[in-house]
Image 1 (cartoon, helix red, strand yellow):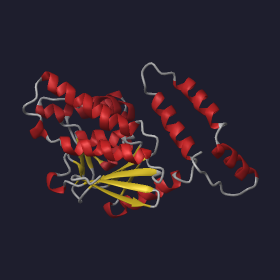
Image 2 (cartoon, one colour):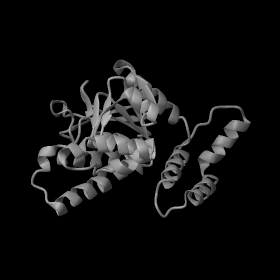
Image 3 (cartoon, rainbow, N blue to C red):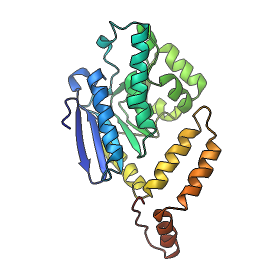
Image 4 (cartoon, rainbow, N blue to C red):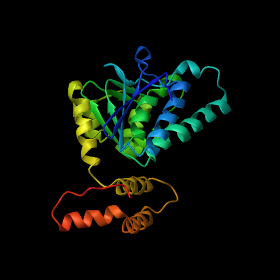
Length: 260
């Protein structure tokens, strides 16, 4: 599929998804969200893709927020539908994906942009990044999972402060709060992200997917994360990758996983 708002590039087993609306600071309009749904659904199903890096075009913004102009005509039901569609088709799709997704956060990650980054499994930021959820300045509140994922990542108190004040934080703050795991210079950002993802991609693909499911289960209401772990751990013993991993360990060699 040819995208109008995204750039897709493959580098060995890594797929780059770049939001390409630099003149709009990569804001998330309906068309971009629809394309993100398609791009991620295809990447998760593509056997040649091991992991995904998502970033924004240009030096100014990862994603500066949602396209507010599309909100003006919405009523209560329209707003709820917008939120639900975004949750289901994009943000939850990414969070529950079967392959690791890393957000390379350059510049502004605000509102829906920060929510997009938080839906990813890992976030790495450049030292010029600014992050925040400013929705209350518009008479709104975060609607793409921000109240939930920010609380999970930084704790209730800091999430309350960030959302209620609408203040932006620096990359250094985000690192301190646990919102990102590394901070680099802008020039080194993608190098660092690739380094981490390439390390992940040397591990067993089915085990990675199972680990993602188990970690997510810890934050899913009505799901016993421990039982999920027990089940997924047991399933691992039925994979060819497990047999290869044990054989490689015993033979003191590097394992060659096939995702089987």
